[in-house]
Each structure stands twice: as C-alpha cells, then as structure tokens.
Length: 418
Ligand code: ATP
Ligand code: MG
Image 1 (cartoon, rainbow, N blue to C red):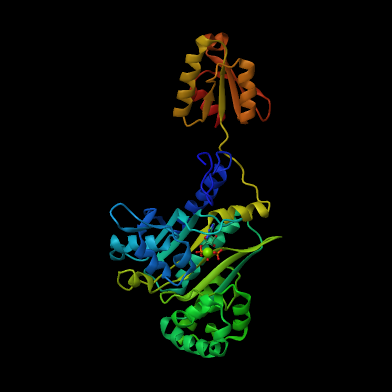
Image 2 (spheres, rainbow, N blue to C red):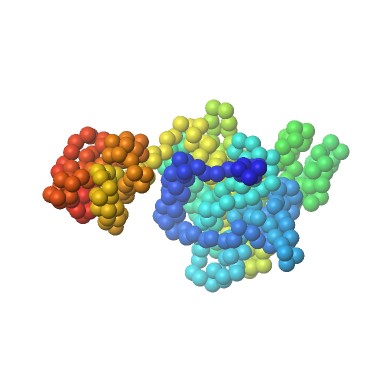
C-alpha cells in the first residue's frame, strides 16, 4: 500500500513530464497573447462555495466531491473544478473595481470521487479561462477561440465545435413550463434522478444518460427555438464573430447547463478518434454566477478543459511531442585531479545559460561517454591533463560527429554552442 498511489490518481513520471511542460507552456503563451492573466487559488475551499457555484443538482456536487470536516469543524471540499474558486477570488479582491474585462486563467489539479477508467480519474488537471465584466458576444467568440486555437497549434485533428444557446432566466422560465408539460405524461417512466429533476431542474433531463430518458426527450421542445429576442441577437452575433475568425461550428440544441446562472452561450469541443468521440472542452456564459456567489451583477463566461484527456487525444491521434529538455553538453574528465576543473566548468557553463552535467559516480572516461550518449546530449567535451595545460579542448557535436577545438572557457563554449 505504501508504494502504490491512491486509486484514481497517478504520478507524472520524469520521462513524461516534458509533455506536460510543453502543453502548459503553449497554454501560458496563448493566454499571454489573449491578455489573460493567471490566478492561483487554494486546493480546498468552503464546501458551500461549490454547492452554490457548481450547483447542488449536478453530479459533481451530488456524488463526486471530496468533502470533510477539518479539525476546526469546518466543512471543506477539495476543488472539483476551477470556476467557483476563480469567481470567489474575483469577488474577494474586488477585481470588478479594476478596468474591465478581467480575463483569468488557471492550471490546476481537481478532485472528484468517480469510478476510475480511461480518461477519468479522482485527481485530474484542468486548464480554464474566465472572462469577467463583459456581455459582448465578441467576448464569447474570443473566449471560445482560445481553446480552439490552442488545439490547432497542438496539432489536433477532427475537432468539432458544438454550440447552443440556453437563453436567460426569463426565456428559460417559459421554456421549463413547456418542457414540463411535454414530460408530464412520461413522468412515471423517467429514471429516479430525472423524477427528482422534474421540479428542481427539468432541463437537466435533456442531458440524462439513461436510454429510457433519452428516448423520452427525443421529441421534446427545444430551448433554442424559444429564446427571447435579446438572447437570439446575442447568439446570431456570436456566430458571426466565429465565422469572422474562420472558426467552424455546429449547432447542438441538446447541450444544456441546467443551472439558473448559466445564460445564453454554451459550447463543447469534441475530438473524433478511431475508438472514441469525446468532449475535450466545455464552457459557456454564466451571467448570474458572480451574484449567486455574493458579488454584484458581473456578466462572465469561460471554459475548462481536461489535461489528461487532451494528452490521451494527442496520443490517439499520433501527435508526437518533442523532448527539448536535452542537455547541451556533457563535461567528461580523465583522472581524479581534473574532477575539480570539470565541476568548475560545469558551474560556469550553467551561469552562461548552458545546461551541463558531469560524472558523479567515479566512472571511467569511456563509461562517462557511454552515459552521455544515453542522455542524448548535444555536445561533449573531455578534460584531460593536456587540455587543461593548453587551455584548449575539442568540443564534439554528437549529432554530426564533428569536433572543433576551442578555448577552454565557459564563455567560448557557450558561444560555440549557441
Ligand atoms: P464528463 O461528462 O466526462 O463527466 P464533465 O461534464 O463532468 O465531463 P466538466 O465538469 O465540464 O466535465 O470538466 C471539464 C473537463 O474536465 C472535461 O471535458 C474533461 O476533459 C475533464 N474532466 C472532468 N472530469 C474528469 C475526470 N474525472 N478525470 C479526468 N478528466 C476529467
Ligand atoms: Mg463528470
């Protein structure tokens, strides 16, 4: 037990870490280009934040949260997602007093008590972005374009952007009545969860995974056909902005987010692979959330995507990530007395911005070079008595096999390598 990670968790091994670093770097880069700044919030929050922020009719809150009482008898929950914490932080620090919009991103670990399977873990990682303080459909389009552009840059293929509008609390109220009228004759056939949703949140029934419920809702009225003029206008403009950016989309009237504070835009990005067709990103507009969590009225929208599923999809699509953490130079030495010189050169090289290593196991020079080869270094140099006396050494380019004799100083070597 001591040597096994808890169920549903996994280590990112040193041999895989470069993939995460590469993806995270691309995420940071694109956020910078979009003017999106990072927010870092605690791993745990007050349980109530998620009950209100994620919604207590959702699977996440009903079944999946890691909730416990701490030693001070406070109910604490490990974050199952990032939006609630970002919104709490936005309110707590009065970011709405700054010129708007506020654009935030997070790269975080999340915790959900789920049945572990491929692409589904108990600890997983999310990248998410939130736009606060703007109601503009252009902001929605830009926010949606961020993960789309990111996926394209990472080389993903067969992507579909599915789009829907779920209106505002005003138009949704009328729609809920319509939907309930439609569902009434089928009430007894609904699954237990959906019977419960019938009064609390009928729209979520459209989202049910049970085949009986799926069948029942097949001919249900669609919210997209009933939204008010303002919501329709917003949706039409969103489509125009996406088209202006050459981002293709499909309308999927069954995407729902059945919570009151979700408004207008909802979207998902799916990636079609040989054996799967999974949602790899989801988000939308939530104009009511900041108020729900105790702030004033601040319109907002955002998305979250799962890192593990992104990596799985890249793997399935055969996208290779190059490991560019390769060492620049391995400094070999002959004889114990030259070990000090090797250590000094490695230290100086690092101060010149070069990645350098030397032997720490008392290997023979032959074994040192064998090890350097294994590391896949770009250059090697060997320090013997002659080199040190002459202050000159041969730098070997390992890719080309060529050797160049240069002055034995860190700066000269760095200039040669760069
Ligand atoms: P699903 O329908 O697969 O359960 P979800 O609706 O619960 O997904 P969101 O809450 O929208 O997912 O989270 C956003 C993203 O986080 C998902 O698209 C997915 O990539 C990732 N994700 C969610 N739950 C997990 C998990 N248990 N393990 C790994 N990734 C996850
Ligand atoms: Mg889920």
